[in-house]
Image 1 (tube, rainbow, N blue to C red):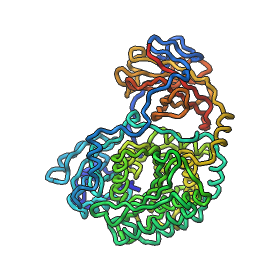
Image 2: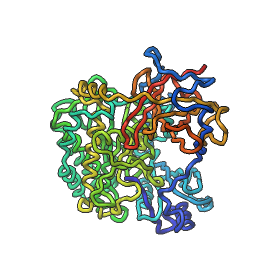
Image 3: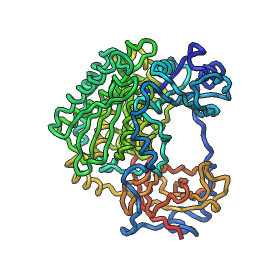
Image 4: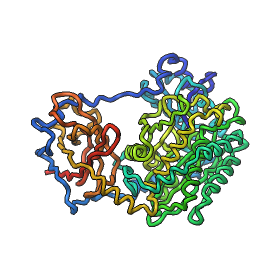
Length: 607
């Protein structure tokens, strides 16, 4: 896991961060979980049209809200990510950089300007300072792999500060100006099966997940002593994981392959392992389940067992492969299990692979990352924490629905503190939907990045088992497990959602300016939604006609809780940028237990 908590022992270690630590130690250093909050107005009754009781759609002066007819089909591209010709050309050059040279993005907290500390530091290309608790960043140019290793080691110290490093050029990763794309720029391909419907074949496979097998896999990797990407055991780690995956997949007699992906530069000795299972009639759509295979220990790289970080993730992937292959399970879409090289040095393996997939125009409809899944503050705690940082709203909802449907819930939804992240960020940056179920991001394993990260200190095997079961469900629903069509269809038909959801669409001049959310754009709209009192959460997305599968990322509506609200209804609002509405949209409503209770498609047409 690239969650870097740093102790900087000398001023030469990292000048600009040392200045920050020296200046602000004892203050904001401990605010790693902090985040700034933007004002969204008071959510009062002035967001509700005058006289509207929420019992019917509001007949606005500019928008018509109606239930869509089958002929109202939206023209939505669903073929992959939007990419310019220049970006594709740049991405195709991946791996052609001069070996040994790296550009990295460093992220950190700071409480004010300390730019003078950068004077005379030739490694600093640019810097953006933001007042804490916002995250600042700098782009560094590191001329050698040895320097990359030194900086990475300095950023994996003890718990006194929050910083992070991400390779953006070098080792097969190419900087093409990629950034996390807005949801409207990413075409969403929904799952084959609704996540709120329990499929018998999925439950059967989940029951076969074995804690003993996961622990055995963790132990096998731990016993390599170190999987450091620049160490003597770098290649052995790759070979071991390759053998683990092939052994786990022995039940698939055909359609399964494993390849090793090489990276240029200093990390060439450690390869990324990619195992693939061919899909059926939609083999061009890919579901990716990822983890990283390397480990790190700044104090002694020869003793980096990395049981939790991240032998647990690799072992969980192997166990899901074993369970599915033992039953000969097939899928409509292609499924890939990835074990990335050199994550601890800056997401090198996943960065190169994600950018390569983007350059080739591959269609990854869902990526799930597993990184640290066997430790909890309270021994035995198995709560799954759905990370919000660098992830996609619609896939987070997918995980929450699957957890509710199959595993009794027991989850939270939280951001990572500071600059920490994992390989899912590489896929998000390349424009692919990604999600990350994790240990508690407010209480990290104190043994991480040390010789004490061993199986003996992994105290939450139940958490690892639950994540493995979650992956079985995630793959089965998103890739479409074969033979479950009738089971799913019958249960879906038997679980209707009440359509009692009402809409009002307001434009900028129809809402008091002080109530407009901070992210409101000129020319945008505010959609206000009314629902029965049992509804506690509402989400909206674009759909095609009367379908219930989203073709855009979901927008989470904000509850309106102040002002003189009409009695007997709950009200919510969501903000949409200009021209974001298409002909058909759907609202999904959930109870406080995350049970889906209401759903309605509407046609929004401007008069």
